[in-house]
Image (cartoon, rainbow, N blue to C red):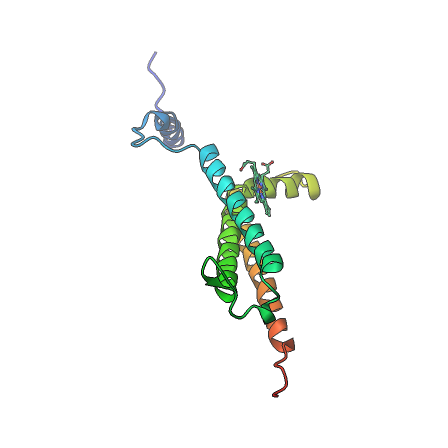
Length: 161
Ligand code: HEM
């Protein structure tokens, strides 16, 4: 019996299947760092940043005198203003760490919202998750921006003496 000639569609399906089975045997180059290890070090870093932020904030709040009376006071040779700048830099570092932390768990966030909160039958695919992520980031940045603009309108300069 002569074997049947494969149709072009069957041929391309076979080629695709062969490609899939070939993939794990491709040379991998350098050993990849596991995502758990990346998560561990990122989590440790944001925990460290949170502790530092807490210490800096408590120091400015309780150890220094009130900011209006802190002229001339120093801690480790740094003035109140310099300490507050460092506190803000720590906050930015912490916020960036949290951003990456949530990005690495974005699939989990989208899946929980879709299946447990919205009770949808399907979770969004990767493309939609990226769109939701970028949209969420844009909304959050606009909320912060709107808050700053609001403060800009309501801040008052003291009357000239
Ligand atoms: C000091 C701050 C934080 C620390 C130390 C921390 C630590 C952790 C740890 C240890 C895990 C589990 C291990 C992992 O997969 O990475 C985790 C998971 C997670 N974290 Fe955080 N986290 C912090 C802040 C946040 C914040 C602010 C958010 C959200 C805005 C967040 C969202 C999540 C999510 C969605 C997961 C995945 C939950 C799961 O898979 O069950 N984390 N975090």
